Length: 116
Image 1 (tube, rainbow, N blue to C red):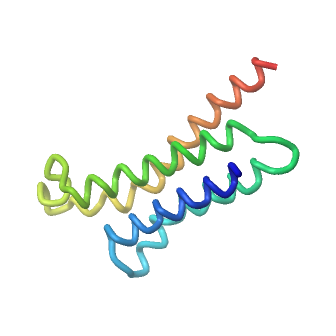
Image 2: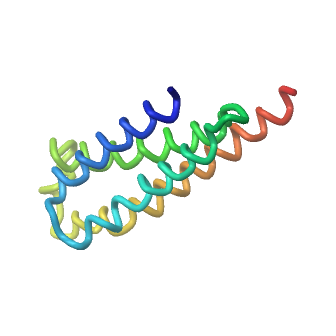
Image 3: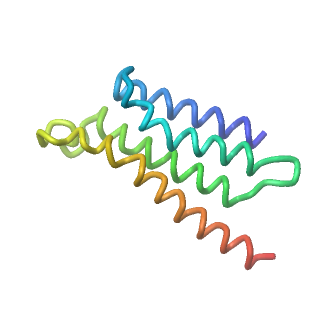
């Protein structure tokens, strides 16, 4: 159940990315963190039990991607219209999303290890 819910939510986030950016080759770079999060969910929520670190990684990564694209769509704080180089956010946001997800994974893995 966890696996299905996670994949559906990641797919919804992927559609948000497609809506915000349109359909072109650069959208693949921005979908990459969601693909990685999907692979982590598939491998981390198997028959052997649920890895909370995997779920935290996927959640934090997806939320970071969604937040950036929602800020772009709704122009929060002049995200889209405030600068001539505003679209550079799409160049760096996938790396930042994976970095934040990795930090969440480390924190959750630490809690998992010490709670046993």
